[in-house]
Image (cartoon, helix red, strand yellow):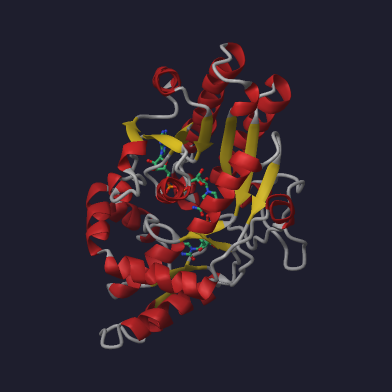
Length: 359
Ligand code: NAD
Ligand code: TYD
């Protein structure tokens, strides 16, 4: 059995990963270390496929003593590191916590892995792996005709979030080249799907539309993201962590690049169909263009040839179906929305980020 430390497993991708991994690999036991910040919730860990192979620990990835205890008690041989502050807009308002969690937290985990795996040699070196989950935002922004990001594209982060993730990627790579720590990194594009905290574009638009609130589109709405259904990302991560070459980076993406406004309009038409009698139909009437995000990256696009050729991975969800399933999931889970709204700072955040944004 592998003994896997998942960090940030109560957040969006981390919790989907735990559901996915327990279902797809009977040979793993998981310890889930999560601080339960505003973005993490035990609601995301309800109805796991096999509770007995999952242990939850509340705590921070900056707490070295706690991490050492987890490594020792659970004989950790694999780390899949998701825990992070993840929202660009919050990084603009409050960058310090991004440095603490994303940079110092990653460094702290690397130090623990170095102690147990390289100094104390608790496992044979070929049996351990530190997989770092990162983002395509480390590469910066693309002009209209520039080629997609790929593994050797230079780093050019432009938001405090992207800069903190870039820094953590550099530390992870440095621990491989300097100490020989067996690492892999995946840089993935925007994810969507169930259990995403409703500060991000897709769930925010769904919840605002259902409730007749304005749909705040930044700038001209022509910014482009590459969208990947979260389960496809989970599969890619596990392939890289278990079969990827040590020291390597793999780019992951969905091969879907509509401009933001198209995503918002698609959500509106899905809701028009699912809720034809809503007083807010047609939901497009709620679209409101608002002041742009400072330093807003214009376009992302990412090449997935390496992971496809080496590991046989490719996305299996089509965007139209994935969006439909996602909208339905939010409509079918009002208790989740209520619990998440109550236990987080969502209402305060909405006022802070949108209250003074000019239309
Ligand atoms: P999220 O914000 O939904 O979840 C982050 C989780 O980390 C939360 O459960 C939170 O409680 C936990 N956490 C925060 N600080 C912590 C700390 N100090 N110690 C322990 N736990 C802490 O984020 P997400 O969207 O699930 O992203 C997960 C990872 O994937 C991040 O590293 C992010 O950079 C990366 N990523 C995200 C996307 C995306 O589209 N969401 C795309 C590519 C990569
Ligand atoms: P987001 O989901 O925050 O992800 P990221 O900034 O990491 O790509 O935003 C996705 C895109 O949607 C991004 O171009 C910003 C835009 N956006 C809006 O237009 N309005 C909003 O209220 C939000 C949250 C995002």
